[in-house]
Length: 402
Image 1: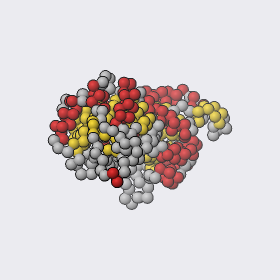
Image 2: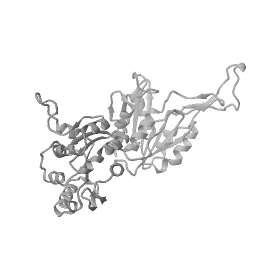
Image 3: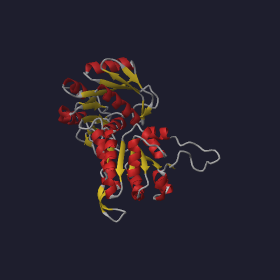
Image 4: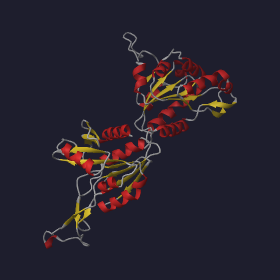
């Protein structure tokens, strides 16, 4: 999964010949999982059609302050709302005229109004003839835009529309997307951090075909792993048996079966991680002995003697050094007090409480309703949400603490 996945990208297109490449840019962004909206300058309409861009982006394309086709009752295209919608604003191609207007805060079209209203990171891919690109006034405008915090993708060498050859070509669409990913990754809040997450159930063997386990699907742990990866972390996901897969390239999946397997995997990595989240539902008990062959039912119900499994989270708390350690508590009674007690006993920095008493939350489902409890006993209640959204809430709390 790309760092662009789920990002809202506002693409600004200006009136340069390189605008003919923007359908490829829209397609590449959408393929990475981004939601794309396009705003064009009036002159950009001479080079690429809104129909093509709207088809590829699956969103209307805007080029004026009022909605087209409503001359009797014009509707305003709200540039402020559009600018605030975006997670990032990419202007490609950016002509010399547009760069000058941006640098001087001249606002004579919808794209420039969006730029001057934007609160998100702005990325610019210039495109023009070589002498125009190298002109001191143009270079000064780009330098000023960089001083504002904008990021400029350098123009490329090659053949230009004028027939000349030199520096001025817009960076190729695929290269723009790669550069965007690299830039966003470098700026991600967990870039350079390693996050260990345990997920799913453990299976404790009775015989080769039967086990003691629980109903954990692993969805919460996998959602946390995806969110950590999106935030820039290198993620070690230690997972019990599930039907899930981890898509993000920053996630290293370590499959395990039993609590003993999970214990070994955790402490193979734990000393070097920055954040650890124990979201797995580790079985509390296991058979003292496991049969080597399938137990035949003709023999009658077997007598199974149980012993406790290793308490992985308690040992993580005991050996905690630099790690920020978060546990999970699934409770059915006295939920808040039991979770607070677990947080204290196991030396956690925080604990996430979810209750089986909350309808549609907990094991197996795609939603969860949590309370995030800090080690100082303060806590935050959250509404029922998809587990992907719950993972964002959890990492927001972790990042605030860090």
